[in-house]
Image (cartoon, rainbow, N blue to C red):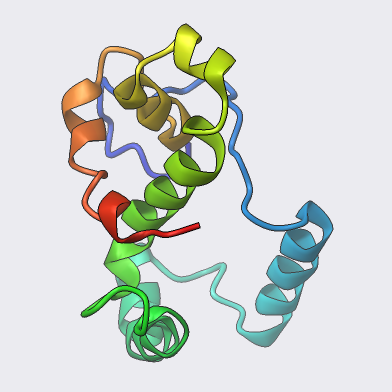
Length: 130
């Protein structure tokens, strides 16, 4: 978990992160991004200031027709919505093992008991048609 904000609800143990693309594509894309802009020495605030405008423009360009008024800050909610539709709703065994809120908490790296936070990530679920 990269950004826990020292929360007691952050899972500090390794956990499964479902990916929505081929994992090789993700690794290659991350490597490409790291070569494009070196931000390793910047604080989170500095990265935000430097990249936020161009990232928001890209997010609107790629996802705007599907989700009105989307921005970078909505990507975790969109990730949850897609995972619910693609993975959770189509897996009856997973549904027997955990509730929808528990699944959300697990893929976001939250503790099992942090179901309130999980509920706040369900905003886009009704918008996604797969």
